[in-house]
Length: 219
Image (cartoon, rainbow, N blue to C red; front, side):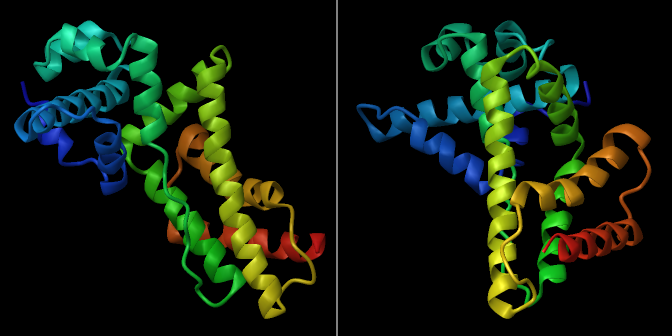
């Protein structure tokens, strides 16, 4: 079996994800117990993320997580009372970070944001899970809420970028963040999930130039 084991896959989690899991870990009676509890949660979460990338949301079961991770089902249910609770926890922790440092211009900041989105979309596991989440969110209000929260984070990043541009005199007034986000992210999602054409630097430049031009007209 050439698939990575759960312990190794833990190492691919981001610091933000690991920090979230650490905060949620219960406090044990001793340091060693707390460490074991935290480790088991991390292994289960990493295994869940890995299985989601392979099987999608519909194919995820607690039995499969227990088999792959080596963590007993009783232990998993002690931390997550149901499959749905485990699924929601995993999906909630995989959200990207859209914070973009001030690059000195509206176009530069939009390009940095778009590049951040592309990094996520080119991550095989993330893209596969995102597509599965988008499908399941049509029937699951909790997953729909998670996608809405991710959209809100993206819109807030755009709001910050446009506020900087306004302060620099590049924009006369603030833009509607969701409109600008759609101009940037829409073409990227189309290429990654539908046409499956490369998300090249040239295409990125076209997307950003188009977004900046239309944003100027909307302003």
